[in-house]
Amino acid sequence: MTTINQSCPVAKQPSDLDSELAKLTGNLQQVQDTFLNHWTGDQLTKFLQDHLREHETLIQESKDQILCIQKELQILEQQSLSNKEVGEDNKKKLLALKAVIKESALKLQELLFEREQKEKEYIAGKEKFNQQKELVEAQEKATKTRLRELVKAESLYKEWLGLQFKKISEDHLQFVFSYLDPKDHSRTFSFTIKIENNKYNVADSNPAIEGLDKMAASLNESNNLTEFIVTAWRKFKELL
Figure: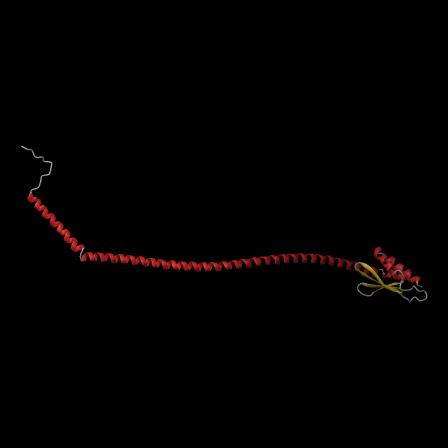
């Protein structure tokens, strides 16, 4: 007697096979009906159209977005070009301003140099003027001092030599001798002294004295006016 193995699957009976086959056939028919009616009919068309519209919408949105981006790029390019033109214009203006500033700086430097030179010339001129002023003041002081001394000595010279002083102008003094001519005491003999640049200038001798220029040179060397007056008195005396 043969023993049956319980682990192997038991073969189905014909009635069971027919039932399962019928069920599978029904399922296949249902799938076929669903596919044919739902996916190959109006439903499939509608599905495809919906997806097509969505796709077209996405495409249009992408186109619109690209167009918008292109417009923005165009605006940016125009702005960039405009900014470049403005930048070039500003660059030219900046270069022009730099040139003006450089020229102004050079002009200012020239003016400062000229002012410095003028200040130096002014200082030098002022110093020279002060020196000349001091020299003139010293000469005037010396002249006035000598004239005062001459006037002060008038009484002495008048007593000894019959001499009188006559102030003709601010810097001219006339020396007049009398009592030289024993025949005519009123007869006068004279000469004029002018002190100029701290020097004696003798002129207008009446009557003329021989060697008056030499006497004047000796007077300026010795500065001895008394000796000069005595010498002139003798020269006039010799003319009698």
